Length: 194
Image (cartoon, rainbow, N blue to C red):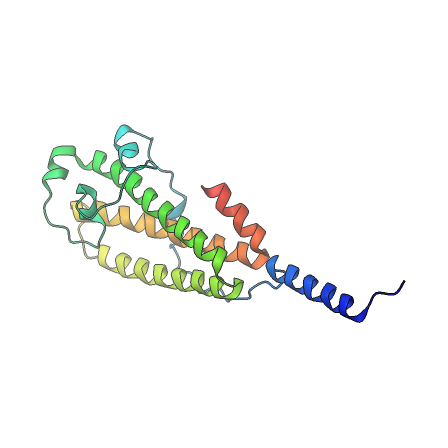
């Protein structure tokens, strides 16, 4: 029994809708130029997971601008901090790793929501825009750190921030590569990372 024309049309529409959902059309967004050295710090391991680290990285941790660690969210120079005097540079660095990992995880979770609602092309363009912004921030911070003495707290904290900018760049590059392969690849990468 031959298939009716209407049924054949419906089958074809369903096939196209399925392909669209499965993202068989992969975005072809051009990768921006990565400056030399931008990924060097990304491969540094996080410090040993200490109590200070975990006090700032846990699912129930609420990020706040009133937090003592928020003092170092921006670019140097930093104003003097009683918290730094009390805790010491090493412990504050450990806590900052925890805080920045928490910030990064929240950013990625928000992006996953946008990934599920946006078209593949629009989402890939968003990832590229984030990558370009991160590269510009990395370059600006790198230039700024050349003017700060290595012995200063501002240099230590600035290098800490530079390391995290490098991590963001590395992850965004991975994201773009995964998106070029397809949506499943991006989801697998996200699940491996978190």
